[in-house]
Image 1: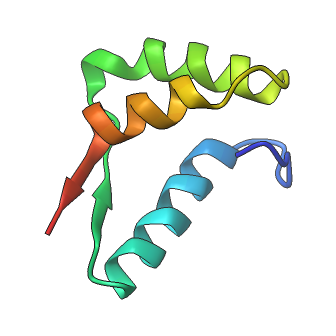
Image 2: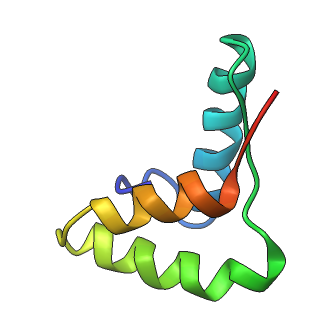
Length: 68
């Protein structure tokens, strides 16, 4: 998500690609809960600004990752 490949849609594209990869490996999916969207965006901004990536990884693992 750090790379700004597109003018718009970078976060959506990243989640779609991540889900494709996870599903192809039989691992699960990532889904950002609607009520956690702002927290996700804030953590993503912090990550993109070069701050510690541990918080966004923890957020995704605890609130967004669903194993299959």
